[in-house]
Structure formats: structure tokens, C-alpha cells
Amino acid sequence: MKIVVLVKQVPDTEWERKLEPATGLLDRLTGENVADEINERALEVALRYKDSHKGTEVVVLSMGPASTTKALRKALSMGADSAVHILDDALAGADVGWTAEVLAAALKDSSFDLVIAGNESTDGRGGVVPAMVAEHLGLPFLGSLNSAEISEQSVSGERRGEVGTLTAHASLPAVVSVTERSAEARFANFKGIMMAKRKPLATVSLRDLGVDPAALAGTGRSVVMTASQRPARTAGKKIIDEGNAGIELAEFLVAGRLI
Image (cartoon, rainbow, N blue to C red; front, top):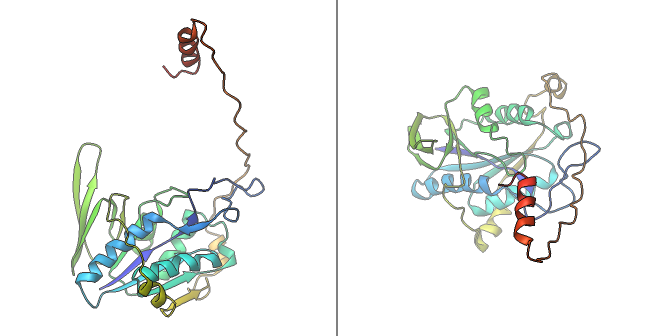
């Protein structure tokens, strides 16, 4: 069994996230960048299967700038066997369409049995990349699973709907995404951290994947036309109780359509 886990490096949610006014893209240089927690949960699903099925190979795949290596090394320290980093200047500011197309290109010749991803990243929150990757590969897709059960021939899991819980299943190979309700990611121990330094981490470009950057540019790309900073918060209104504070508070809430 070969399982590929899609991982992503994102700005730490403890830092204030903002757009660059000149480009409209997310500022990824000001604060700390970390491995996305939802992808670590996806990795945990793969590692739990590997724990009970010796011979399973877990590969982590990511697309991003040079700093993405940090997130990949963390995944290796948690227990993944190898990593692939798609690094190309032509991919700077790639939207979900480009991202899915390039990830699919990297997966096409990797002879995997299962691809696992988080259902949505904490920076873009589009929630569509795993499904788009599956479409490019022509594979079944099980999205937003709260739990996943993997066997040699199939994958299944539970998905919460608006009126209940659904059980979905698909034959392998397949692509699945998991939610924050799935297994909590393990911590890397000292042995794992030391071993991660010796595990394979391949860096590939678009041309290594057989993707012509010029042809990719011709497939269309989202362009931010304008971007503006959020206005500074104004001071709130202070109400001093002189016997009519309740009335003033009610009027304030009504004016703001809060009641």
C-alpha cells in the first residue's frame, strides 16, 4: 500500500493574517509559517494504517516556496517515509486551479493507492483542491470525512450531513479528504526528528513533472484586481449609567440590528 498525503505550509493562525495591498495575495513573510494542522490530521490517518500494516509506504507531497521544506521535514519526523516538494518560481501566487493541476501532475506517475488531504486549508479555506485533484486523475473522491477506514481494496468513512451522518465508500485508488473531527495528529519524538534528517526529500520543478509553465499559464488564473486594507477599529461608545443606561444600550443594539 502506498499512501500520498497532501500537506501545505500556511501562516500561523496566532499571527494576524493580512493581504499585500500591491498584489492582493496573502502576506506569507511577516509572521511565522507552519504546517497546516488539518493536513497533519490527514497524515495521522495514513500513519495509523501504517502502524498496523507493515510494508505501507507514506509519502508527503507539497507545493510551495523554499520554506515549505520545514513543513515536509516535520511530516517526516512524524513518521512519513519520504517527501516530494514541488518548487518553481512560476507557481508564485498559484490559485486552486493551478495548484490542483500541478499536484495531479505530480501524482500521475507515482503508482499510489490512496491520496489523503485535509478538507480545507486554514489560509484559503476554499475546500476544493482535493476534489479537483481527483477530477484531474479520474478517480473517485470521498470528501470531508470525519473518520476513514482503509483496507487493501477500498476506503470508507463517515461524513456529517445537514440531516444526519452518511457512510461513503470507494474502491482504490481514490482520493479522500478529512475534517478536523478526524484523528488528532501525533507529536514527533526525538528519534523521529533525528531520522527525518536522513529521509528522502525530493525537490522537483514544473519541467521535471512534464508541465510547461507557458502552457500552464494559458489555462487561466485568478487575478486580484484590487485590494485594500481593513480600516482601523474605531473607539466604542461608552455609556455611563445615569438611570437610562438600559434604554441607551437597547437603542444601540437596535441601531446595529443586533436585536
